[in-house]
Image (cartoon, rainbow, N blue to C red; front, side, top):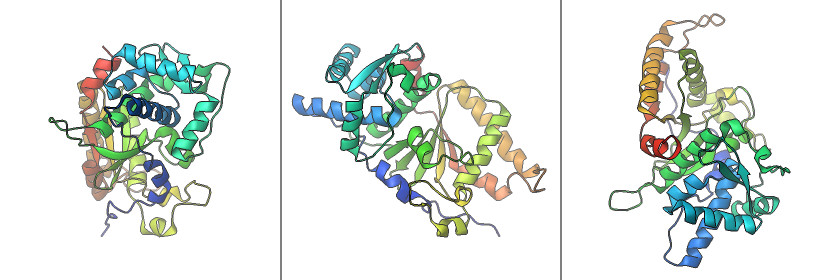
Length: 311
């Protein structure tokens, strides 16, 4: 009888750990000097990990006005740590990217050596088509870290994260579905985050399900083989369990309903459909049940996303 490995058996947890060790919790201080230093280090780390930092996200996390937020970010520009990149792809018309000096400081803060390419035009450092998506992603990951109870007691949804940029460096192979982020949950499970901010065709969701299956279900040989080839990249990705579950973070109620409908249909239909090459079902009944339990649609951030990016 087919069984699945326990959710705690992430093949490549040691590969993720240096990135999970970067503290991304924004700590409030009563002392203005300490608060300024906290804003500075948090901003530099965010810009490093996402490729840029958004004033919209900073204002939300810091709980400061837009004017105060821009004033602080522009001070970092004057210090030579950031550059302004103006673009119509950002909800407020601008994002901030690291300078060479800022990148060096980010390496010192995190002890992570990440690739950095300076350019005469700051906006050319970025994929402009992904700016809105990545702004939303940075908001979601940050708010999950800053989550609190109604009385203000910290109650983070996850302890740490790594971003899509970092995931792609770990897994450059086309065999692995790029995910928007990974988060380390409070029970030490690792969840993939996917931002669903547009309507997708049923076939696109089917392709995602098959790639999630590969990443979520590992055979014992892959686990015993280990994950790292010595240069930070993973080997044998087809047999490695890369994360324990998937959170589909939707940006509207309509996208939630559409996504839920397609996933319900596909997880019901795919065990009864066969791959033309292998003559095997696209999913076993056990696979479908496992995926249904471990692919979760999250609606928590809809109101903040709509208010900040679509209002």
